[in-house]
Image 1 (cartoon, rainbow, N blue to C red):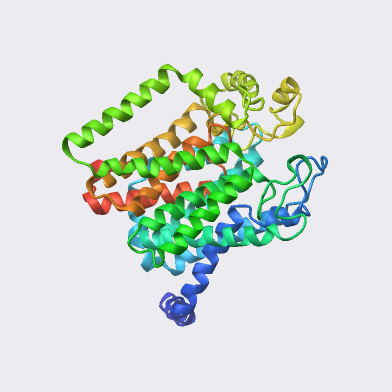
Image 2: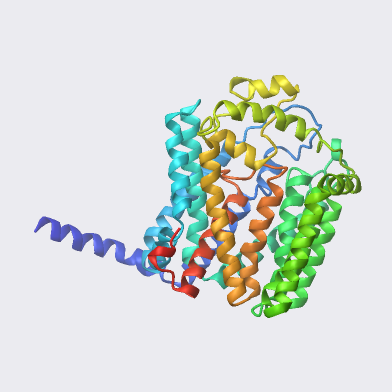
Length: 444
């Protein structure tokens, strides 16, 4: 009797809450929550404001960014609450995501288990919880919204970033970087390279959006594409400009999947021939591109760093040093690297090497399997029924491979790249399941 009365009382108390959750006003609050935290995950505005618009070269000043930890915890908590409140809406998709992304969940659990062999268990535990929370935020977006709505949210995010960045250019000392990179546009970010990375994705996303059949005004989409491309150039980030050109070319090249018969075979043969040409003359091509971009063959010293890092990877090649347990300045295993290169590095400037440092070959393999399976699935979707919205996961995964050759964004918590990767992987698995009626044998 007591239990029955307790259940009745609980239902009576929670009914107004669940009724409010079904309202249009709550839906607007929910979308605002998603967009605000996408902006926070991108590091827009917050880092710039908290550092007082400092620029690289202003001096070695350590800023207090602890307030961001509060934002991240709030995001994890609110995401969990939304999963509960919207359970009837997200349940079916969540089950599909869980069943068809096996390697993703194994990777996350493996990252959490790395606390057992970590050089810094406390940091690993915090990092693993943060990584799971970051991924689950992306998963919630996929479970809560249709694929079309997800694209619209991503376009809204880039629209906000684009407009705010243009406005910040006119605020002295903020939108334009000073000191070492004086004159380079950085928008609402604290560094031109971070700005370039985000605006590269913005350029490609607006281009894709202009081609979709649900774009309400293609002129605005083209305006977003043009403005984004101009800002990439204005950021003076040569790598971002290269990635932007490659993504634009890739978006146009992917249309080959629409072709059938001999035309498709001829196109594949052309791509294969281009690949073998580049592979055969790799060093010549690389040197030419680097010279064109004004880069030295060591990629601003990165290749020298990587040689030293590879020696540290060899020491714990299978399982790594534990998530977030390596890069701690002179107080961690990173001291060996810093001492060797005479430079206080925050990362390896290579996502694949950094992930191997943290979680070993096993961790890298698990995440790469997740990404590779997603890549194959999205190609199957595009080949079966080509549609421009489905090109977005293909584009982002391609970009992930590009950017992580010189930056570290693989398996990084509290970062927009990880949120987008979670969206790309899980939304593709849902769409693949719908299109092909995936059976248990097809699960990851």
